[in-house]
Length: 459
Image (cartoon, rainbow, N blue to C red; front, top):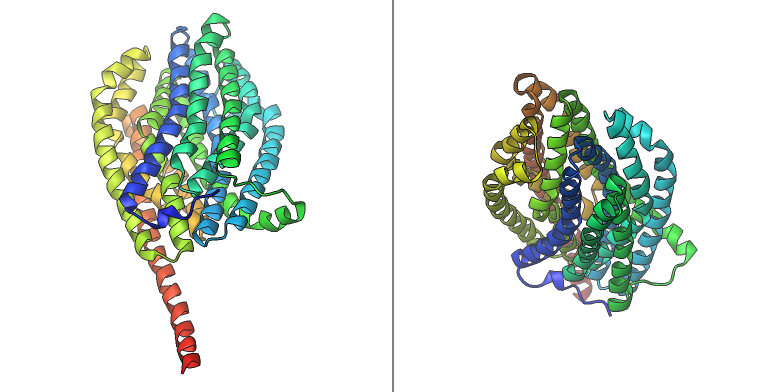
């Protein structure tokens, strides 16, 4: 049976750390495999293969972001129902979000698959790099519905406070991928296509693990009813659609960066591709922060515990600061190892070292933005998340990387992104704290007349 609203009790810092750590481990397992993909492919001695996966990953990040967006709706709706004590409503919402995700992801695959070469060409892939990236993506994109199901299943379990089992889906997927990668890339001699096949099979393993946790352990799926689905579709869309737009802004920013980077040659593209693989592995605890804070806010909002909501976001900031200080120092120390293990050329090596030395701490400010996104997505204003993230992806990316690259070359692209993170992370966190205060004041105004009315009745 589903557990009670356990996130409304105990230390908020402990909840933030445990939810973030397990979420980070799951994400890091998934992205670590992408890093291993890049490592194996770099051993082929073909920089076009590394650049191809870099271009393809820009598109794959887009599809994964859509899956995460629908899982955000699952977490927000289910956690709020659990916080209110309405378990049957939580079950109904769980099954309807899953159905929504399957329908939507199938439609995306149907639209995206035939247009893959055109999209890659638009963001700067050419020649053999374009051919390799197209073959990689045409295999991998077929698994998007499986990723969607796995992500939603993890979101449902996070909504219940079961961060450990939510981690298992991505962890198992990562392990399966890591085992199959060398077999398909080297033993079968399939190269880039072998990496894609291994990743596709791993995505289907995520479905089995998520199904087991949601259905057999928590018994959280109600019976599917078409009329109830149409009733819930509006509530799902109100959260999921802005969250999709929010998450699409990150691939948009990556596409802008990749397109701009391509003007500096394949060495710069390969460096950005390596950095793009390193970031989710090293900063997985930051990327998991939004998914960790969301269920805590959702359950406590449903229970009317604003004191714990304030405590949760403060705890998240402390966690993020400590995490970034430790991991940025670690990244600085291993920068030469990264250059060597990925067989980076001189041009690529300079960019990797610049990121590790000067740019990496900007992820603390990205963590502030992730906290703000969790606040708005789970407390009824997902459009604010969309505006903030699109602001970062456009105003906080294109003008800044264009300006700084004029004076700093390819390094200016990384520096411009960092400046955008500082600006929009600080702005987003300020807005989020004010919004929680507004909700608290609104509830206090609503409670006071009701209390006076009850007092009058007693008299």
